Image 1 (cartoon, rainbow over the protein chains, first blue to last red):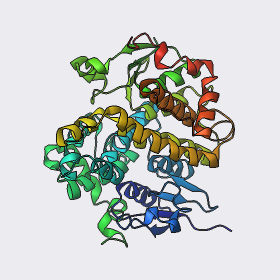
Image 2: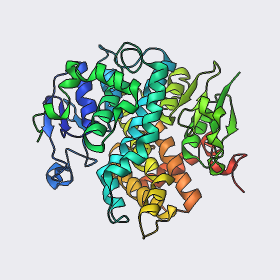
Image 3: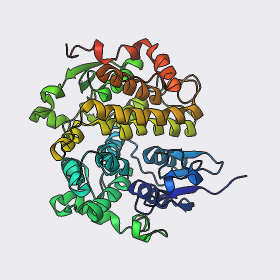
Image 4: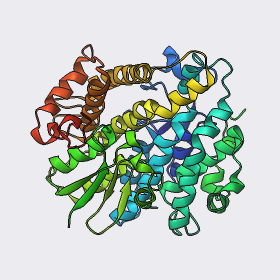
Length: 214
Length: 214
């Protein structure tokens, strides 16, 4: 029995936001299932089958197969729904787009991970999460700025939307909202971000537009 | 002209690329960038990698590629002999999920910068070995569970994939550097030994490289 495509998501999870953007861009119909990370729903027994890695996003396919890890889900959607391509044809440019996504996925986002914070709090008594993230991500934002300067058009890489944009917007939006990022320090990031964030596929995916937004 | 791999013996991320290049029999030269001696901090290396981290792979045409997983995908596309991704799209997503998990939820959490932050903000001093132990044990135990669902002779099915190369390099670097013991993780160690039997990949280990610290 085929079920609808289902995305397990939390409104404020930037990794979930990446997939919401991609699903919107590719006009893929899906059913959202909301997991409240703040209340620890991802760790509960109730959801252990649905969230094999106790995290969001998780994509449940029509045949019941469960996919995890936002970059892996993104690549799967790109292969299965090739209309509205989000990766360039040219292998070198494709590698640059993927490299940009990876800088965010593994070079930036892990430092904001709740499990990272909880572990550091065992060592640092008055742990300032905002200061830590600002500290760890300053050079990373400078790197993104350099790469955009070399590659941008209207969007991160030229004038077509790519996966890079789907990763950039949630990272910047979260940094502004939660970690006091002063985006004016990064004019190219700011320009590209402003070109993207009000596009319908991006706007509809943002945290405050989600049904589970609090 | 062939590829040039900028990296270092002790870097597991470099080992991943060395393994793929050797496995696919792609000719390359290595340039040693010793991050223990801060050799990545030169203006010359900045032109190759804007974030001045390793690895970087310069193609025969002179394109500079960064981020090991983006580099892996590039090599797979441009050199399809001895494939490291399955044909089946679900399995491809499962391979990528394992690779992404190691890259962002184990490797990143090992960074020296995190230890330095903790030790400048805390009375309790953190040893780098304890940081590696915590995140490797947690990460590898999670992978042990998840690959029990997908494995055959290798971690996803019966053919070697990028997931196995990632597992191998992660386990190998933790064992080599800090003598971590993963013996209780039978699936993982089974994969490790199956990969270790592939001569070209075994030859990519840190201990065989010219710049391995004596």
